[in-house]
Length: 177
Image 1 (tube, rainbow, N blue to C red):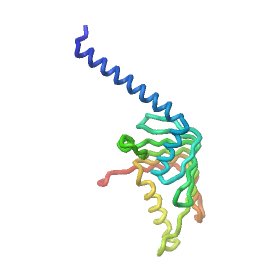
Image 2 (tube, one colour):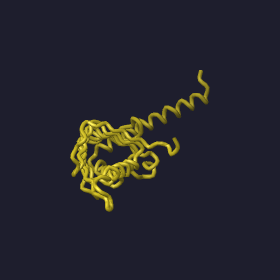
Image 3 (spheres, one colour):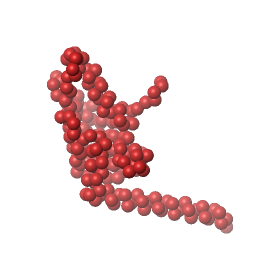
């Protein structure tokens, strides 16, 4: 026979597991409600600086608490930029989520179409636009732990080329090599 301590431990583990499953099911049913989706999208919009619209949102726990969305459309609040993606996976920063803030830590965009505008910086010539573009991209991506673009199409206005079928992965590294 099992000892009383082992039985109590097994009961506690079973109840904890059932409570976790109930919590996940509750979250999944809540995320399907349009009002919860609007709230979640408005919080994400505030944190990334883009007005977001999506066709469908699902909760995911693979690799962290996050959301999967279909048919994403985003328009910048501050710049004349926009992007669309057939699918997006956003993993939320768990520490910030516990504190009530919806902050993404990882973003994975599938087949995004990105339309960017690069303003010429004061005091720089057209030849130096490359460093401006580099600073622009690094500035935007540095907020997230990882960013992945898969089969991306990037159009930069006033540039003579476009990037198509691009796979891009950026991950924050340590300060020391």
